[in-house]
Length: 438
Image (cartoon, rainbow, N blue to C red; front, side, top):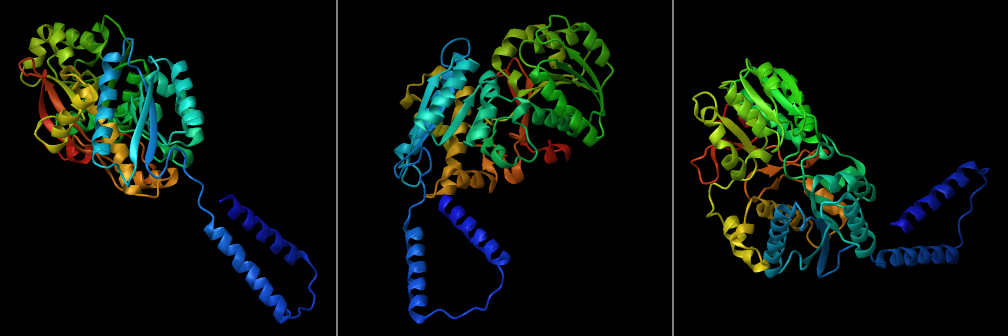
């Protein structure tokens, strides 16, 4: 490529010289001179054509090298360990079946302990020393926030972020920003899906929003505001300190709305729903997928029985993984290969499924590239058509969209269900939700 650019520059310089030179009478070249010139040109073209393209970092004829740093010790190990197992299991399945385009996937990783400093050091080692092709399964808000700018600067493909921070959201990525591929819901996008459900399923025209003043809450609220303006919904918004122990003032302000959106994560959400129960505000409350867990239901159900079970009220949450049918080929393979990489039954949870999703999405990009694997080809391939989530829905990266998944389901807290939640609406796009699909 450098030679081609140099050749073009030389041609332009020569063209400029001839354009500026005084015109003189042209004479025909002698036959021998013309023959020698033609032979020299043919020889130069043959040499240029025969020279192989510069190999892509992390790619050989037999292997693709990828990496991530991930918290497999400390407070976030219960998330990081199964996530890593999920990725390893998917790549083992691929490698056991011959790889992709004759290449197996070599996945290397290190423990960053959820530390931004260690995450930066790990990325720089992966990129500059190990020379990996891509980062797959970039893990955790603090590490992603600390490394994202440098990763985009160097242009390395990054597939799947285990976080929903708003920094990942782009309506139309250009240049090196195209190298970033968020899969799981970005809070900004999820906020828009929340409003779609509020209007399309709950028929709400006035929505009370209580949002935490941290990155998660503010990013969710940003998406809520965008969608409310777009779809003609009125908001009554109140902020609350992340980790607050009292939500009485906020609940009092939103009590007359058609429903409430709780734009917050685990620590603050129980405080809000308990206060709604206490003030007897029997309205539907909708929250982020982050709060949809059996652990949260088990810890709080006894305190919100009336809110959960009163007709016309209820506690709802979004989701993006469809676990309604565990007999599909994808789930069969998941449960087959997880033990083969050392995972226990306890590890085969939603976090492991997201690791599996990360592996699947990356491999779909590889399959589209075939044998000709470069960063540019991979990025183009990822944008060429929607990427399938192996456990339901799809993600569209075309035209520079970097929004994460925009297709989500709706569940209701249910302390009699094995998972603590009952599916109400399967995975749907925003357009289908707004059409009143139920």
